[in-house]
Length: 365
Image (cartoon, rainbow, N blue to C red):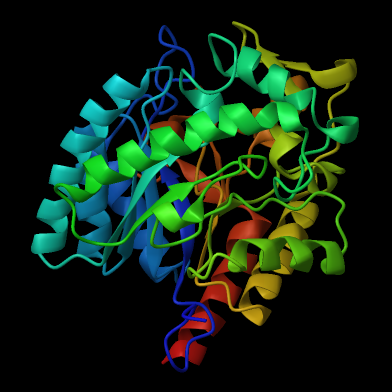
């Protein structure tokens, strides 16, 4: 099985880095303001302090993607180039990835170690696969097929009603991958929701977003073996945990603890209760996952996420960082440090990941 190069446990290890996306068309970008000097500093930190050797750069604006990718490359990082335009149909998606693929090929021709991620969880973020006009309607429809609301590790055994939508998904992914390959001549993959029944023969790498909830090691390994059965190297484009007690059991669903953000900067919390902060729980979750991936020959893994500017640290109901997956906590807007080129401080998870990445780097030398 061609999952690793000789002597390497995990070839690529790093973090997801967001340059801004819009969940709904009228929404502001998830990264505002976008400050190039902050991005350049972040990439230096990711490469030299976090000891990553790769970064998944995701977001909608292609100029931002290119700036962040070039900053990463300048620091010696491999780039998993992840353009992500939501709430568009297949025709618009193809036009968008065609432009993105041409830009990514420029980076590859310039010598970058680069992988192209064609899309992310297309069935819920874009039009034409699941019923619904936005992510909230489409994910609510899909959730009706999950036992107890928990996300399945793989699409095995899901209801037959999902077969036709997933056939449409694979038709779309074939067209998108073919469009990318017209310009980009490096490895191509996709960042899949665990419930999407993807035909991974379309791609060079198999890429499930492989969040763990309450699954045992045996159950989790069985899920990994399902993805490995396609014969491609397996990568984990994202995994992680929020920063409160109980978040580790929720995996990709942990963000729902913040139901809304009010104009005064406080959150509307799920069940009306501010959760208990636990940086230790987040760090333990990430360490457990990275250890598992290292022991089971995962080709690449990316912690979700380096930073989330829309979830700053605060006090009480204003501590939006509780609902964040980030390895760093942003200073609140009223703090003068929020205007610095390093407008955040490191969480316990940052230090834990840095230790593990440093060990991975030493073992791969």
